[in-house]
Image (cartoon, rainbow, N blue to C red; front, side):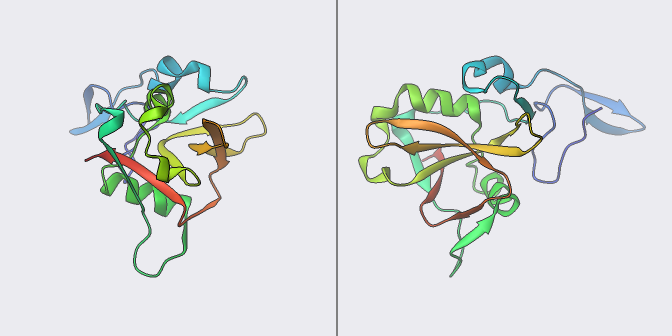
Amino acid sequence: MAKAKKSGRYDTKPPQQEEEKGVATPKQSPLESATLATDLIPKGWEVVEDVAPTDFQVGDLEFISFLEGNETSVGSETMRSRAVVLKANLGLADGKRILAEQEKIPVELRGCIIVLPGTVLRSPDGCLRVADLYWNGNRWCLFHHWIVSDWGGRDRLARNK
């Protein structure tokens, strides 16, 4: 049985609840990105954590920093926790939608990285990774950073305005 994590993420999508000794725990169910964004998951990789897709219009997203005060960077767990608090915890299925309408991403974000912290993937070598979108000079592309990476001033989260 998958247990809810403190950050509000689940090992599986937040499904129907079942009672276990008086405590509601989520039932196992398919991961959203494994169903909705299979073409963005490299062969041999596994979706470890995921969030349900967000209801948004790409043109209505705002892109925000997760850094606080004088911070120049934070680790992945801090960034991912703040994404939940900031209601900017998009996942890989959301990233697929953003890529499909990438002409609506503001030009001033070129040079930034749009992090998709709601999905965690495991590569065949066992490394955990978080998906993000980056501008390659011609178009927005998908990349998977190691979860142990630090995230800094050029990195952004996306959320509904």
